[in-house]
Image (cartoon, rainbow, N blue to C red; front, side):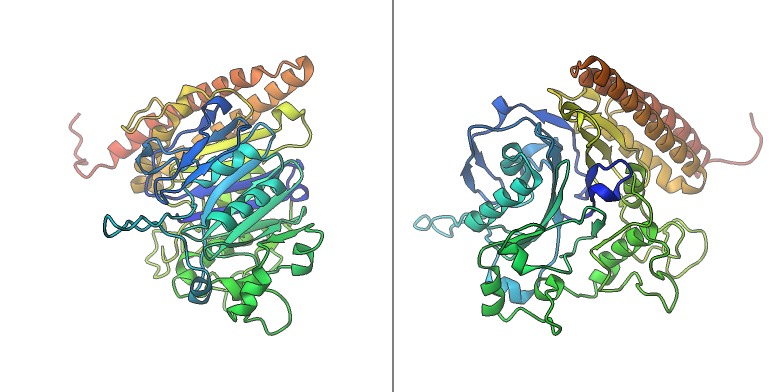
Length: 487
């Protein structure tokens, strides 16, 4: 599923929290945010796409999830934080190449062609990962280890990247072919960006097969590279992009421009990003996977880069100018996004309230990020009871409506969108701060559910106000308007 990911190390953020965030860009998938009680976690899991059945452990943790409202194609839990304050986001669809897939093909479901044959069972995929991993891990590192073992045992039918974070570490795992994988820890003082491509650009096998401080991988990965003549590096270094990744014309219009914009925003003077003599252009194949930011990164920065449609560049699709470069690159804040979860694990508050999930629905270009406490037994109806039919009674559809109204009237509507986004951000932070202080003082952590209700009440009020402004603005811009004064 096309998505965009940003990962922020502890020392790279403004409050020493770790952050993992990803736009879940399906095809206008209707999503909700729920809490899965351990008693309701399945013990025998069966996937819809792979038809794979797995026995799950008997000791699951409570966790949040953003599943599809209609489960006919599977759960697709997308992202969540468990009660041990571990976050997981799955998945970022990445790229591979024919040499890798010849050596280790994807494990895809194939229905038997006759009654005498058996169906060929498929492997794991995006539909499954959160459900079979997140409830059973207590650190980000454990997430890598559990998912890695499942990949080696069952395989996968697609190329994916998966993120994990806890209070101290951020890890990124990329699948390689059907059964192989590698994972790298994001340096504490850096952030990493991934735009639908295999992203890791440096790997230390000595560490991966030794102390595993910052690198892990499948047990036979070095032999797999050698046996299939995959290593294209000429300088003795290990650049996984050359070994496992892609370099195609479509990458240059669909993938690399997104990495370019995110780095350009967070490291504006580190490199020259624009002009004929730029260090990196939107179509460069060697844009770094991770960088140390020029200033500490905030939640608002993460939301902004994941909302990008190339503002301030010739590629902005909303430009009025007759510019041939207008809209030539795939935006990050694309229309078809279902949900975006910014999973923040804080380090300066008590254990019970470390996890904050900043949730957005629909196109990030026009929506707002609403924070909620993750370590609760249930989520408010405004974000958890979402219908397949359009309704202003939940945050998902309110967000989608705001985007649909603002997009065709961008010039006049963007002011209302910006006010709406600022109101949710300002009030969201204020409410979180107030309840943090209350709970730290009283040690009554049951107040988290009260806080979430207040946050959703605020979001509904601001969403309704925004819709009122946007519907009036859209009505004024209708084609059947006429300038003659007849009222």
